[in-house]
Image (cartoon, rainbow, N blue to C red; front, side, top):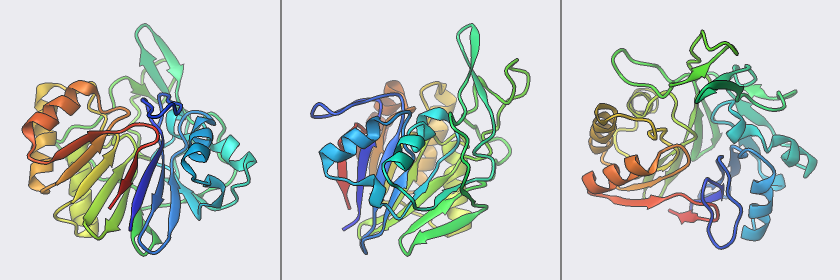
Length: 266
């Protein structure tokens, strides 16, 4: 049985900690065990202990991109004894900033990685887990890059070129695992089809970065999800409640919100 355990998200369940961040434990049918992001702080470790998950025993850590809310827990993970490989796109350490109202703040990885394996394209983590980077950005398809910059003055937009996803193969079918989906949901699903040959999905879990989406973007995301025949959505973090509600009303599939402590079995 494959399992996804939500170690931290924006909301919590059963008294578990929450924060603006995302971390998961991914387990495949054969016992493969990888971490997907680490949230913004050590909180994911406390939650993991309460859930009976030992992140230090994971085979490795895969990173969705280099924003603080997905990488801030790495120093605590290393102190806890994790010694496995860390896999990410080559640009994960790049400094970056974001505009919040009237100021621009640093939002990159708080402690740049001294050791990690750069992944270009697709890397098989286990027979049923695949990490994919370098998601093509197709002309005319939206991306989630609003107010993200490569400089503290806010002159150069950050393309978040290190955005990545994981594909988990399960008995029920393929499950797409997202971090923030800065490449855009349509681009991501197109990459899944073209690079891995996956035409239809059973499930999609993670952050879809639709909290700032207009109606046109929401409609595009909806069309892409309908096209891939998704049967189960579990979204949170940067997805946004309005987007969740829109998708839940429009899609003929099961929709569930992410939260710290949630365990999904496939």
